[in-house]
Length: 394
Image (cartoon, rainbow, N blue to C red):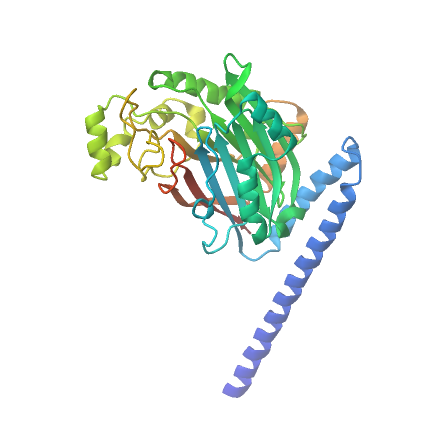
């Protein structure tokens, strides 16, 4: 009896294994068919209504694919924000990109501020890739990463790279920008944004540079809100930033540490008691007052303030204007709240309803790392890096 019982279990396991293999093959076949459809859509006119409808249908199909995927499928996202203060890039950005981290990265998103933008330099960068784009492409291309897209406004530069195998599932790429510097007429401050559909999930990245100086915290909040309210993408299903399932907001937000004197700041940083400074961080303070900021999440500030350093040094620059150290460089994210309703037309309401119907198969975001890299000294800011796991769950 034991032998027969064991044999029955073996046959049951064999059948389960066969079913799993069959399911995996079906998923692979479905993805191949979708990829073929995508290549045909690329040949259609972007103004063709049928093309737009097909794109929306494919987004839904990718989400349906996740229903037949393993219980979880995880994608790794690595983000960098850095005010480079018009400097040329270092020869080696390997540490910045953490290329050998395991499990490996699927998408890199790099936001730079104050890229050299003199008139002659800016015009030349329009003709050929700028030096910062070059160094990242040269580093990532040998590892099978492809530049998905880039967008630039004066000194603001946003770059997105993805593993080549993901390219068929990155759809509907759009970008835009907003000027806030000098009454909105000059692009030294503002935001550049990029959005796309990633395996059916709508994702948006916003790289910004907000107003400087200690006393302008309210202006920074106003600029943040202005960018959210005015930026629009040329797409029917998620025209505004907050229409997207997942939003990453990052850059030189320029919020400072208020009230504390320079001596207390230095003492707290040198002793590693960074938590003593959090209550006076302007962004954390403003989050307690502004509802729209409360929708954005951020990891703990367990790294030293990233501004202002002497160049080619890990020592703070306390001479001259005596800029107090601050966490000016930040990476935030927002997952669209469930049942989030649009205030616009019926198409937006339909899109919101569709998102709600798929909430049982959500995009779950986990932050794995949030820190700075003190090894780079070409700027008076230190770069901030964050890594995330994007988990598609059944």
